[in-house]
Image (cartoon, rainbow, N blue to C red; front, side, top):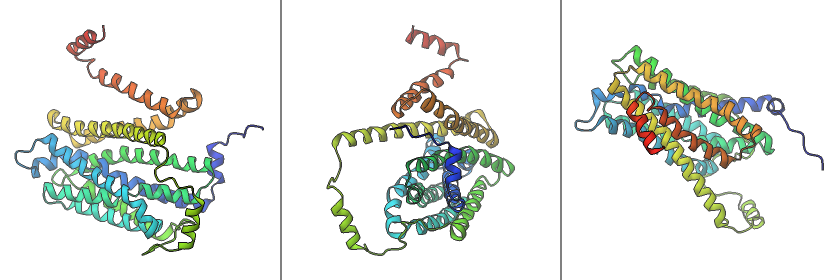
Length: 342
């Protein structure tokens, strides 16, 4: 059998109907505005904590709480939003979540105390956890493997662009008016309100979107599909071992990324860096992530024929060398390294 010719990304893009491209572009806009919540306010934490911090609470702990409140909210939201969309509908879920996320950013901008900001960030992360819904939305439209992979590849790119643009823009806004450090949240409100209007006015429902269902309907269809599906509640144990290992790897990677984000804000206070400088540094990190996804990963996968596991191992092996570079300017640090690695 002749090997199937490789299809280029340009061909896959052109093969997608123009109206469907609009739907997917709006979906990517929702992901962009959702991921703004990660670090949009990071350059302003030092100014906010200086004014509204809890007496006796360390600066690093305060930054960690502000950062993790949004992440915990998104974690819980992502865990249930997919199930919610099965009963409320994909389109309904994305529309309501976009509206509530915009409202959450507005509440963050109006925060009057440290704990109010923590609560509002948790709320924003919870209602903004629509990434899983958008993944299912795209899957509802795309059944061909290469088309699905092509459009799914935009999700990490868009989230990385948001990680780059968020802190950079937040630093610029915060530096312009330091008396109101939470002003960047108004930008998050405006962008998420725009996402809501785009979903409401222009985004179509997916073919498998059944809309709002208060109770489980189409019992015959469900029972027939259940009968045709082999009974396997949890799948083979070896598959779950692989999945759990992958969860662990992804968790460690995300923990490292967020750890550096918190560390950068902590250094801001010690070195007296402005919000603009911190935003620029965070933006540069996001830009390098984008470069890695667009340039390095294709080389590793297509030119060097790395598997997914090999790419993960390569990334974790490269990380210590980056940390070691921080000791280059410190001769004592270099001596310690030479002792450990003779």
